[in-house]
Length: 369
Image (cartoon, rainbow, N blue to C red; front, side, top):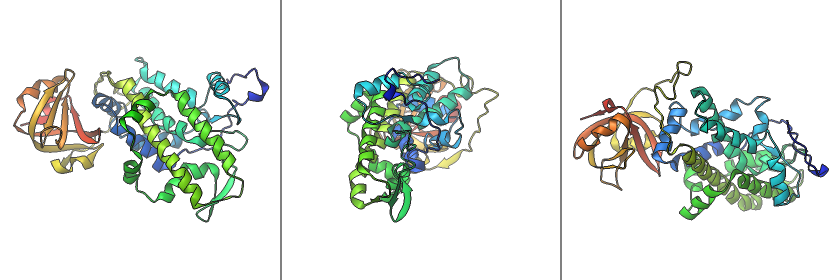
């Protein structure tokens, strides 16, 4: 149950359930794909286990597709305009059942060692989605217009509303493919990554609140949204999606970088079967095109390095020009010192780490000479 604030003018946290879909399909997949690129090797492995082999982008809209009356309020936060930072923090801290509290709850769930595989899977899918929601400005906005849903405008000679404009219409106007969106948006510097990942979820939603406050002031019902508006705000959308992806990666790295899981016993249970994908034969030079797929690939080893928790094996060329990195963990790690200069066949799921393909192998039978 939501708590009331002492100041009557700030009694706003009775959430109004409406059908909000933040960022749309393209935006949410971009957030997840950017995040995937910035995961550590161990985090990427843990995420893959908890998602049972599905890619982060593949589950990015699951929370919208499986929304119900209990979880619908998790996607947004209603506030009046004009709050100071202090009032904002106080109000949000005393609230519940919204995007901010849902992010905290899902992160707590992912830390809980007692949860089942099904619960971990669901919590992770929610977190992937809700971090994106928190960065969509119109999801931290006013109750009375349902986050801009009732503010009708026109864009590209079609009727829409302020919320949909920011969900997808401005993104669609770019005309970019999903891959090109990621390439265009994912441009953060090392300094920006450090700063964004040090910010708390409270900071994320404060930023969205500041932007939505500006957006309300910039638009009137029935307004024709012109090219100047698009040119002004598409950089804002690019930054918010990029920030969401970078911050999602940061949160997942904090949660999972040191976590040890096994795909067979520690996570999967009889009640949560995994659908093992068929193995795809892949050429080494094409392996970068198989992110999220289980492949069999042949290549020469050009060196390896034991970093303690795993042995990193460079395939196709020496570091940093390798075509594929294989991270040997668990029992498979023992074979790491036998592979230099040999041609091997490796089988496993391809993940992306810092823009390059990687395969994490724990079963020594998945490496053949």
